[in-house]
Each structure stands twice: as C-alpha cells, then as structure tokens.
Image (tube, rainbow, N blue to C red; front, side):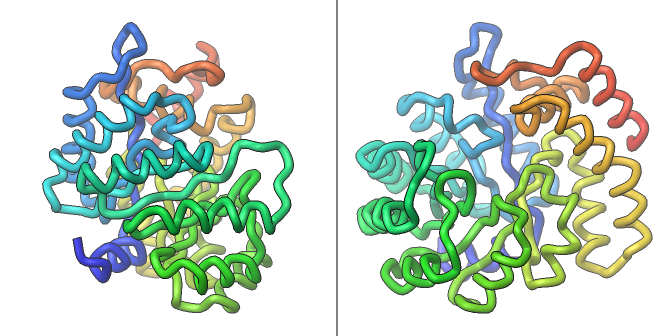
Length: 301
C-alpha cells in the first residue's frame, strides 16, 4: 500500500486493535480470527493493528505471529492498512519484521524493549538497529521501558527515514506536546494509552487526531459514535458517552493489573464474540468484575 494512504489512515479515522482468538486449548484459532478481522473491516475502521498489546503480542510464538499476519493480510485484502507489532530482542524483532514483509503487512508497530531500566541512548540504538533492518514503515510506541524524549524521537526520525509515526503510551501531555512541536509533521501521531478515549479530548487539542480503541472489540458502534462526535466537536455526546461508558470502564480497569487486555476479552465474550481467555501472566476478570463489565455494556447498548 502507498505510504500516503497509510499515513492518511493513521491520521484520520478510528484505529482498531483486535484481540487474538484462542480455542479452548489456548491455541491460536485462524478461522475465528479471520471472522473477527472481517467484522472489524465491516465496522468502519481506518486501519487494523494486529498482534498488538490488546492482541497479546507478548505471549505469541513466532509461528503464531506468522499465522496471524498471514490471516490478517488475506482477510483485509488491501481494504485498510494492516500494521503488525515487532519487538523483544533485536534478532527476534528483525525476524518478525521479515515475516511481516513477506506476508504483505503495510507497516510495523515498534514495541518497547523488555528490560527494567533502559538509558535513552541505549533505547535509541536498539530502535535504530531494528528500523535499519526493515524496509517497512514503522510507528514507534513510546511507552514503558522505551520512552524517548523529543530530542531522541527527532534524532530517530532524522536517522531512520522509514519511521513514520509515534504512538503515545504515556499520557504525558507536556512531553507529547514538546515532541509534536519539536518534530512537527515529519511523523503521524497516535494516542495509545489504555482506553485512550478517556483523554482523547486532550490528545485532539494538541493535534493528535486518532487513537487506538480496544473497546471497539465489544462496542464498535459506540466507539465509532464517540470518535465521530469527538472529531465533529459534538461536546455533549462526547461528555455523555465518557460519563456513562468510558469512566466506569476505566475505573473497572484499574481494579487489577492486566485488565486493559483481560476486560477486552471478557467484553467480547459478553457480546457473543468470544476469543477465548487471556494467556498467563494475565488473568480473566473475576466473576464479580465480569458482571460489572456486563452491566456497563448493557447500560450503553
């Protein structure tokens, strides 16, 4: 897909991050996943990010990753851009990027390294090495152990022509605004905190027009309604949906680590589109929290 089309999709439209389908044995289910991707495309998304955080990238084997990207490309058939994740060790990230290239993936989402403490110069070298070993466009996920300052993001953009975007996973508006004003329109900017809708108004105010919507997995119509109201300046609708749906969801999400993913899989079960359970070290919601989520969904259906 042409780079201009990819960037246009990243900068205007709702971005979806599908959960990954596992069967009752905890194995990847290709047919169920293909059905899910088709459902996403038919629900007005601008691009699809597969094997992402919501898709449990951290728990996937290389073989599963290869199956996921193959199914995603075949199912979307060029209708929307498909972006897959890379990360982990440098050799693994390069290997995953090669798989993505061979499968026909349109771009990559670059995950932070798995290390407790990383100096920025080390993260920069880590990212540069991987970006220089793929021909695909890359979106840098500024989160966790891989947070780079505006200075280093600009340096990475200047050094790696295939860096096309920045996904913010910090929610730090001061630093993000610094980066946007420093780097400018050289990059596309995406909101990427868990349940990004909760700060979408703040994102929009500094020029971040799009964000990743995990809740789309179980309330696609509501997610689209919210996004369209946000972009149209319909403040009353944004306020109403935020108060009735996103605030209760975020409060529930905060009750246990990992619920940013687990609640999404639970939500899919509730609406009859189960993708199985999350894999350890994550856990599914307790019965009490499952019921609370069910009530939130029903109150907004």
